[in-house]
Length: 576
Image (cartoon, rainbow, N blue to C red; front, side, top):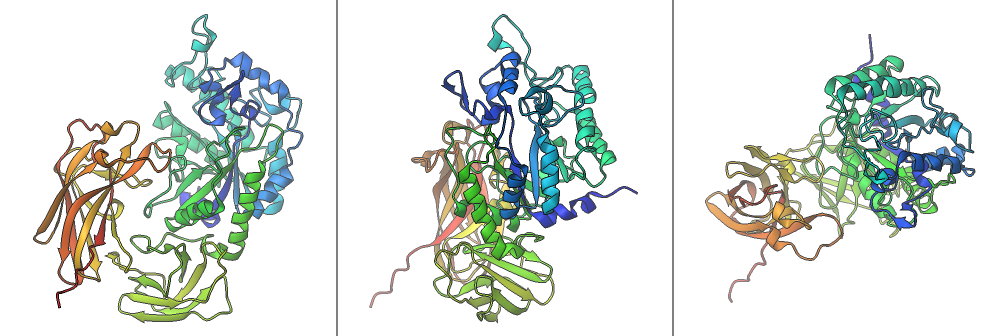
């Protein structure tokens, strides 16, 4: 009897954190071609610069990564606390970074280097207990005939030969049979046990072809996982978009691939490195949603991982050395939404509180149904943590921490597996945030798991409602957070939104008109729009409804609502 997806996923869910490596011929031009800086990510330079195959092939004769050290790469992954390593065996440029049996266009037979780095990495990873995995572009291939996006000389103009992604079905099937499957056969028989095959950009592949590749991999190595990007949701787990991070719990097994800077393959002028604080925030956010985090490095053409990558990964590893029990083998938070102070993970009968905003006084947790048996501060394991439980509130008095300690963790031992009220509870911090991801939706509106904005809200029949617990009554200002394309704000437009609680209602215009100066270079900006005010007369559980009473008819992408925020209005003291 074959293995189930759940059995295959056991090690992967335990791992939670992996290293991605994008390395190939594209590291030689490193973002520049014939003296011109090419826009876009480094590994796409062949297509973005419209480089004909003969010119790109010539790069192989220059590829001699004499500083490549498989032991150093695997050791860095270990030091970073990564449990698996995914490396590009073949990217979209079609060049094989292993000794392909069907394709002489590979690192062993076409470069001065003449070695198979995958064999060396397999041995180095095995010595450290790291799962070796391969990225393989199964559909998009700019070099092999029949591959999606293949370059052909369509005219006398050598730069005009780029074709679309749709190939004649018989050509594409021939490519899968003659190129992809022999390569997969080699990757899954010559390098020992492989953790997963990371397919990418399925483009024109059919569901039957995706299923055929998945079954082919499982037949060769039954324990080998197949990534969701094999296409048509037939993989063993799902893949969020590049650098997309979940805003709420994601059902099932998911992973997010992310960069340390702006590109995947090495690009000489990309110095936009994320800080250690940002990397840890992304790591703990993914873990709190039950999502794996696959973090990329792009080695140079000489075979070195850039020093800024090395420094940041070692710092992340140092944090995991102290706090890894809050990440490895954990599940998503049992709470409906993130607390204002940080993130939560769980494992067995333990709950981990990962603190981003250090409390001025005690740390408050609302809605936990279990009794807490004990609490530990991982940064000061011998210190006492005072625990008080009263009603739906848990109060923790914590020992002091080093000001340099990022994301300190408190581990709670509970009676039974964690259980939490599936209700938004005001935790004393303004504003009360109502994310659309946890609202009850009716109509055609959907919500993206990453980004959390509504999709398809282009009618006035859809509704979203939230039930939440107000602890402090009073009048609250209601603000709508929406996503707007800063380059084309008309795509999202302006809409009339009405919110109601009991007999009270407020209506306001939300959307592009409130787009100010962008806070960063991201195309999608989060915009705040005032809707109005609502009064909550007493503490207790309230239900708020939101409806679009007018949708901008010219807005192709409609209302992209992310959340509502309720901020308590200043209280006016009574006259003497």
